Image (cartoon, rainbow, N blue to C red; front, side, top):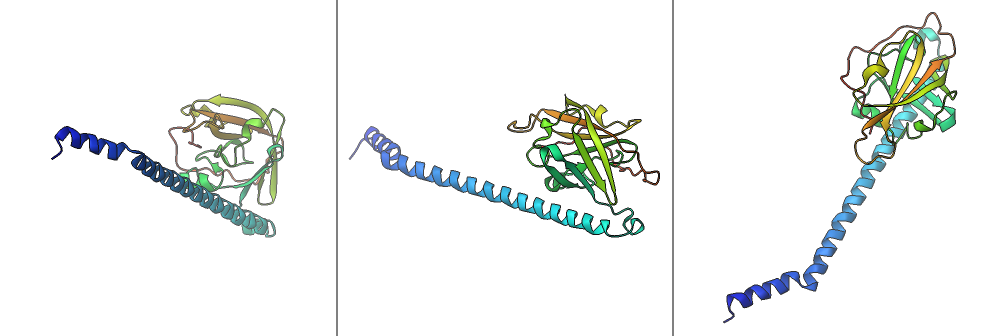
Length: 224
Protein backbone atom coordinates (compact mmCIF):
# COMPACT_ATOMS: atom_id res chain seq x y z
CA UNK A 1 0.00 0.00 0.00
CA UNK A 2 1.52 3.39 -0.99
CA UNK A 3 2.60 5.75 1.75
CA UNK A 4 1.08 9.24 2.23
CA UNK A 5 4.18 10.89 0.71
CA UNK A 6 3.94 8.65 -2.36
CA UNK A 7 0.25 9.55 -2.73
CA UNK A 8 1.03 13.31 -2.53
CA UNK A 9 3.77 12.89 -5.14
CA UNK A 10 1.32 11.04 -7.43
CA UNK A 11 -1.32 13.75 -7.08
CA UNK A 12 1.25 16.49 -7.75
CA UNK A 13 2.44 14.75 -10.91
CA UNK A 14 -1.13 14.21 -12.14
CA UNK A 15 -2.31 17.77 -11.44
CA UNK A 16 0.83 19.51 -12.57
CA UNK A 17 1.60 17.18 -15.49
CA UNK A 18 1.66 18.14 -19.15
CA UNK A 19 -1.87 16.82 -19.79
CA UNK A 20 -3.35 18.96 -17.03
CA UNK A 21 -1.38 22.00 -18.12
CA UNK A 22 -2.50 21.60 -21.72
CA UNK A 23 -6.11 21.24 -20.59
CA UNK A 24 -5.87 24.43 -18.53
CA UNK A 25 -4.32 26.28 -21.47
CA UNK A 26 -7.15 25.18 -23.75
CA UNK A 27 -9.77 26.22 -21.22
CA UNK A 28 -8.09 29.61 -20.76
CA UNK A 29 -7.88 30.10 -24.54
CA UNK A 30 -11.57 29.27 -24.99
CA UNK A 31 -12.50 31.67 -22.19
CA UNK A 32 -10.42 34.53 -23.62
CA UNK A 33 -11.70 34.00 -27.16
CA UNK A 34 -15.31 33.84 -25.94
CA UNK A 35 -14.84 37.03 -23.93
CA UNK A 36 -13.28 38.81 -26.90
CA UNK A 37 -16.07 37.75 -29.26
CA UNK A 38 -18.70 38.86 -26.74
CA UNK A 39 -17.09 42.27 -26.39
CA UNK A 40 -16.88 42.64 -30.17
CA UNK A 41 -20.57 41.77 -30.52
CA UNK A 42 -21.55 44.24 -27.79
CA UNK A 43 -19.44 46.99 -29.36
CA UNK A 44 -20.79 46.26 -32.83
CA UNK A 45 -24.35 46.34 -31.51
CA UNK A 46 -23.76 49.67 -29.79
CA UNK A 47 -22.35 51.19 -32.99
CA UNK A 48 -25.28 49.92 -35.07
CA UNK A 49 -27.70 51.41 -32.53
CA UNK A 50 -25.82 54.72 -32.68
CA UNK A 51 -25.89 54.83 -36.49
CA UNK A 52 -29.61 53.98 -36.63
CA UNK A 53 -30.41 56.77 -34.17
CA UNK A 54 -28.27 59.24 -36.11
CA UNK A 55 -30.02 58.28 -39.35
CA UNK A 56 -33.41 58.75 -37.69
CA UNK A 57 -32.51 62.19 -36.32
CA UNK A 58 -30.99 63.37 -39.60
CA UNK A 59 -34.08 62.21 -41.49
CA UNK A 60 -36.23 64.12 -39.02
CA UNK A 61 -34.09 67.22 -39.57
CA UNK A 62 -34.51 66.97 -43.34
CA UNK A 63 -38.28 66.59 -43.00
CA UNK A 64 -38.54 69.60 -40.69
CA UNK A 65 -36.61 71.77 -43.14
CA UNK A 66 -39.34 71.17 -45.71
CA UNK A 67 -42.01 72.35 -43.28
CA UNK A 68 -42.81 75.94 -42.29
CA UNK A 69 -41.03 77.42 -39.29
CA UNK A 70 -44.35 77.66 -37.49
CA UNK A 71 -44.94 73.93 -37.88
CA UNK A 72 -41.45 72.94 -36.74
CA UNK A 73 -41.13 75.44 -33.89
CA UNK A 74 -39.97 73.68 -30.74
CA UNK A 75 -39.20 70.48 -32.67
CA UNK A 76 -35.95 71.47 -34.37
CA UNK A 77 -33.18 68.89 -34.56
CA UNK A 78 -29.75 70.39 -33.87
CA UNK A 79 -27.01 69.22 -36.25
CA UNK A 80 -23.34 69.83 -35.41
CA UNK A 81 -20.91 69.98 -38.35
CA UNK A 82 -17.12 70.41 -38.16
CA UNK A 83 -15.65 70.30 -41.70
CA UNK A 84 -12.00 69.99 -40.62
CA UNK A 85 -12.54 66.68 -38.83
CA UNK A 86 -15.35 65.51 -41.15
CA UNK A 87 -17.93 65.42 -38.37
CA UNK A 88 -21.67 65.75 -38.89
CA UNK A 89 -23.92 64.55 -36.10
CA UNK A 90 -27.37 65.21 -34.73
CA UNK A 91 -27.33 66.40 -31.12
CA UNK A 92 -29.58 65.01 -28.38
CA UNK A 93 -30.89 67.25 -25.62
CA UNK A 94 -29.42 65.16 -22.81
CA UNK A 95 -26.07 63.98 -21.42
CA UNK A 96 -27.20 60.70 -19.88
CA UNK A 97 -25.10 57.61 -20.54
CA UNK A 98 -27.68 56.34 -23.03
CA UNK A 99 -27.86 59.65 -24.89
CA UNK A 100 -24.08 59.98 -25.20
CA UNK A 101 -23.91 56.49 -26.71
CA UNK A 102 -26.16 57.71 -29.52
CA UNK A 103 -25.12 61.31 -30.11
CA UNK A 104 -23.32 64.34 -28.71
CA UNK A 105 -25.44 65.76 -25.89
CA UNK A 106 -26.53 69.29 -25.07
CA UNK A 107 -25.62 70.04 -21.45
CA UNK A 108 -28.48 70.95 -19.16
CA UNK A 109 -29.08 74.57 -18.24
CA UNK A 110 -26.91 76.05 -21.00
CA UNK A 111 -28.06 78.14 -23.95
CA UNK A 112 -29.17 76.39 -27.11
CA UNK A 113 -26.80 76.64 -30.08
CA UNK A 114 -27.39 79.91 -31.88
CA UNK A 115 -28.89 81.62 -28.83
CA UNK A 116 -27.11 84.24 -26.75
CA UNK A 117 -24.94 82.78 -24.00
CA UNK A 118 -22.78 79.69 -23.59
CA UNK A 119 -24.07 76.61 -25.40
CA UNK A 120 -22.32 73.47 -24.16
CA UNK A 121 -22.22 70.13 -26.00
CA UNK A 122 -20.47 67.00 -24.70
CA UNK A 123 -19.45 63.93 -26.69
CA UNK A 124 -17.51 60.69 -26.36
CA UNK A 125 -13.80 60.75 -27.22
CA UNK A 126 -14.01 57.33 -28.89
CA UNK A 127 -16.89 58.16 -31.26
CA UNK A 128 -18.10 61.61 -32.32
CA UNK A 129 -15.40 63.73 -30.65
CA UNK A 130 -12.47 61.40 -31.41
CA UNK A 131 -10.67 64.07 -33.46
CA UNK A 132 -11.76 67.11 -31.47
CA UNK A 133 -8.17 67.66 -30.28
CA UNK A 134 -7.16 68.43 -33.90
CA UNK A 135 -9.09 71.71 -33.94
CA UNK A 136 -7.15 74.97 -33.89
CA UNK A 137 -8.07 78.64 -33.54
CA UNK A 138 -9.97 79.85 -36.59
CA UNK A 139 -11.43 76.46 -37.56
CA UNK A 140 -15.10 76.60 -38.55
CA UNK A 141 -17.94 74.90 -36.68
CA UNK A 142 -21.47 74.91 -38.10
CA UNK A 143 -24.68 74.37 -36.16
CA UNK A 144 -28.00 73.88 -37.95
CA UNK A 145 -31.36 74.19 -36.20
CA UNK A 146 -34.40 73.89 -38.42
CA UNK A 147 -34.14 76.58 -41.10
CA UNK A 148 -31.22 78.37 -39.45
CA UNK A 149 -27.49 77.79 -39.71
CA UNK A 150 -25.01 79.36 -37.31
CA UNK A 151 -21.32 79.83 -38.08
CA UNK A 152 -18.81 79.58 -35.22
CA UNK A 153 -15.03 79.85 -35.28
CA UNK A 154 -12.76 78.21 -32.71
CA UNK A 155 -11.28 80.78 -30.32
CA UNK A 156 -9.59 78.61 -27.66
CA UNK A 157 -8.68 75.07 -26.65
CA UNK A 158 -7.85 74.10 -23.05
CA UNK A 159 -7.48 71.09 -20.75
CA UNK A 160 -9.30 71.18 -17.40
CA UNK A 161 -10.20 68.85 -14.54
CA UNK A 162 -13.67 67.22 -14.49
CA UNK A 163 -14.62 69.35 -11.49
CA UNK A 164 -13.96 72.65 -13.30
CA UNK A 165 -17.47 73.91 -14.05
CA UNK A 166 -16.35 77.38 -15.12
CA UNK A 167 -16.47 76.28 -18.78
CA UNK A 168 -20.25 75.79 -18.49
CA UNK A 169 -21.04 79.16 -16.90
CA UNK A 170 -23.23 81.69 -18.77
CA UNK A 171 -21.43 84.10 -21.09
CA UNK A 172 -22.23 87.58 -22.33
CA UNK A 173 -21.46 86.67 -25.93
CA UNK A 174 -22.82 83.82 -28.06
CA UNK A 175 -20.39 80.91 -27.85
CA UNK A 176 -20.26 77.17 -28.33
CA UNK A 177 -18.32 74.99 -25.88
CA UNK A 178 -17.47 71.40 -26.83
CA UNK A 179 -16.38 68.96 -24.11
CA UNK A 180 -14.85 65.50 -24.27
CA UNK A 181 -12.65 63.35 -22.06
CA UNK A 182 -8.87 63.66 -22.41
CA UNK A 183 -6.35 62.24 -23.28
CA UNK A 184 -8.16 60.88 -26.32
CA UNK A 185 -6.51 57.44 -26.27
CA UNK A 186 -6.24 57.03 -22.51
CA UNK A 187 -7.11 53.50 -21.30
CA UNK A 188 -9.80 53.62 -18.64
CA UNK A 189 -11.64 56.68 -17.30
CA UNK A 190 -9.78 59.73 -18.62
CA UNK A 191 -8.54 62.11 -15.89
CA UNK A 192 -9.06 65.39 -17.78
CA UNK A 193 -11.51 67.18 -20.05
CA UNK A 194 -10.70 68.77 -23.41
CA UNK A 195 -12.54 72.07 -23.91
CA UNK A 196 -12.96 73.68 -27.32
CA UNK A 197 -14.62 77.12 -27.35
CA UNK A 198 -15.96 78.73 -30.55
CA UNK A 199 -17.46 82.19 -30.99
CA UNK A 200 -20.57 82.87 -33.06
CA UNK A 201 -19.83 84.98 -36.14
CA UNK A 202 -23.43 85.27 -37.33
CA UNK A 203 -26.06 87.57 -35.79
CA UNK A 204 -28.65 85.68 -33.71
CA UNK A 205 -32.20 85.98 -35.13
CA UNK A 206 -34.32 88.18 -32.92
CA UNK A 207 -37.10 85.57 -32.80
CA UNK A 208 -34.76 82.79 -31.61
CA UNK A 209 -36.15 81.49 -28.28
CA UNK A 210 -34.00 81.34 -25.14
CA UNK A 211 -34.53 77.70 -24.09
CA UNK A 212 -32.78 76.17 -21.11
CA UNK A 213 -32.77 72.84 -19.34
CA UNK A 214 -34.06 72.57 -15.80
CA UNK A 215 -31.52 70.17 -14.25
CA UNK A 216 -28.04 70.97 -13.00
CA UNK A 217 -24.85 68.94 -12.75
CA UNK A 218 -22.12 68.77 -10.09
CA UNK A 219 -19.33 68.00 -12.57
CA UNK A 220 -18.51 68.02 -16.25
CA UNK A 221 -20.11 65.17 -18.19
CA UNK A 222 -18.08 61.97 -18.19
CA UNK A 223 -17.43 61.10 -21.83
CA UNK A 224 -15.14 58.07 -21.79
